[in-house]
Figure 1 (cartoon, rainbow, N blue to C red):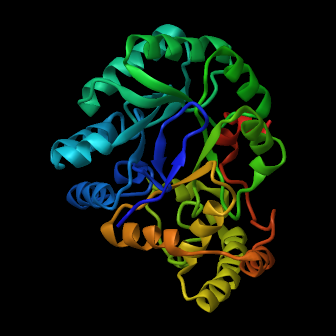
Figure 2: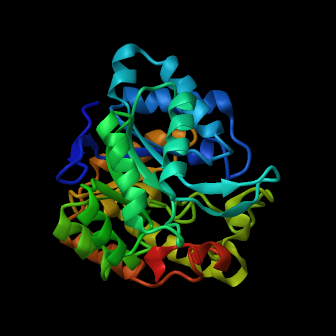
Length: 336
């Protein structure tokens, strides 16, 4: 297939209109199949997906090593087309716990050195701190990445889950190509202040959670049992009455999707695609089957009537429950 592309901001590269978020292949959504994960990465590259997103803290480096293995096993032409987006800064312990974020310049350079080794590459295409370190000015963190750019270890600087004020300060320090942040039919908080700021500054948005971690995929059922190591087992949107309410929204969306002749996941992804050429959805497919379904969203054209029907099915602010539990929400500069 021929993959459409979108610019990653005014200073970044052209990337595939959909990116592949690889986190779930290693962590936070229960057990994953390594062989199927690698096959899914290969299938994505074959389909023309160029943007692969990861974090050095996803299963303590496992995800980066998985991507590195997949790239080594891909044909040279496919391997060369891959653009790697890496988040860093989350501090973990041996029990899998979380203990804050480190954005000090020395830490930035240390994290990057390990990522380059695990990925098996000589540069990272987009590098970003996963969450703002409240003890380190964003100017210092971004400045350290800018030094890595000067040395050729990093190509472009990104941001993640920060608010409009922080975006402006970062952009005044060095060119920023994109902001990675959650954006979907049920997570539309960026529309008030953050999206106008990125558009003013020529910064793209790489939108994760476009299916709200499977909640609005059309495949999640109310009786599904989640493993303790599955993020969703602790997410407010997947609990009790919240889950029942949110799945009712999905059923309303399903009617709109069926009338269009597409799946729920496809219409939800197509809605994000339709919000602007400066938005690149990241799909979190862990299998070739789910990847193929998600890629089908690229063939979905939504007209004004479709968008109105989607809005009626899932109005802004309709979801029940916060997108993160309180402890995790406290780390989001984007929510302040």
